Length: 454
Image 1 (cartoon, one colour):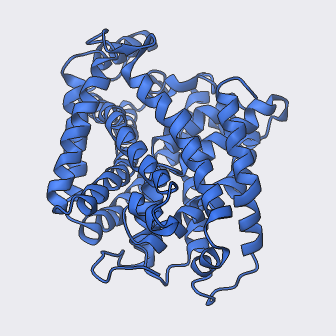
Image 2 (cartoon, rainbow, N blue to C red; image 1 turned 30 degrees about the vertical axis):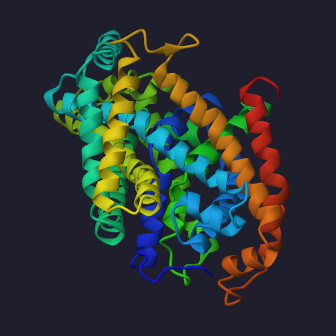
């Protein structure tokens, strides 16, 4: 196994799980998962989602672990080392490019979270649905405010990245992930104690299989793929910091459990409050930034101080979730530049921060401040989201599965997954079968479905 003795490593098993779980846990869990569950049968969607994590998410994650730890380098170099420098190395470069582009526009959405924390503290982000809708529209299309918050979010991320793997990423993850869980639990308890909350709890855990069709299955597959940060370079980059004693299967399972738990808790946080004030659980993507700001205020109308605190904590939770993901995305490009250009971590991080700030600036302006920033009739922000999420991620995930399942020597994969024969191997055959057949078929189905071809 090729490994540099000077390369940084996570300092503990807990650090591995929390840092990598922080990469996976983000706005996709706290924002996207609840509204998808609301639109697709509540617990029915959750059941299908958990199965998809088992058959697609965990095998794909382990595959990236294998490449990252064996390559012991940034994502591009890791693929190159294992492939011997042939054409498969470009899968690694695709992962780096994907992570870099997502960093730029994800910072914009992350900045929105900071704006809503600020607005909630001042009481500006409260009011009826029409007011909140206008509030979001005015803010997101402003030429300065969203750019300021996006750059501020990137600056916070930069301060973590420059401190390195142990003193930066691992240390912050050990603080941020427990904070995220505490915030979640506090809001869940407050939400579940509201009058009429039982209907929301029942909705979340009582499956409605009448809403289940092929679209629900494909939606759950896609959510599991994106929620776990597959093919963004994050998982592979973090795995390069694993020690040879890290149990890859156990780590993937623990991270997936944390990911699912956060998603379910997010549902318990949102639906009881929504049902308490008569908000539809299938309000869609607007649930967080347009529908919910007024929910907590209405739900705690008899206790306005409690409603105020819960609202602030909710958007602080969103900001924390966004930060843990943005750190991992930033690290993908930083590690690449540091190793390929042979420059210091500080210089590499600065290049990434400045470049992504510029990308974020233009993506933000395309949402209203500068209507000319459009391609094919879509804002630049939507183009970045479409290209990375619906093209680069599925292609990268598919090629990674083919690479690990059919190109990388079976012995190399077996050695990595079993820590060179020191771990029990009964699951290895199932894992390899999933990577070779189940995962590629699932990803192809997701890819074709997005274009209306399946």
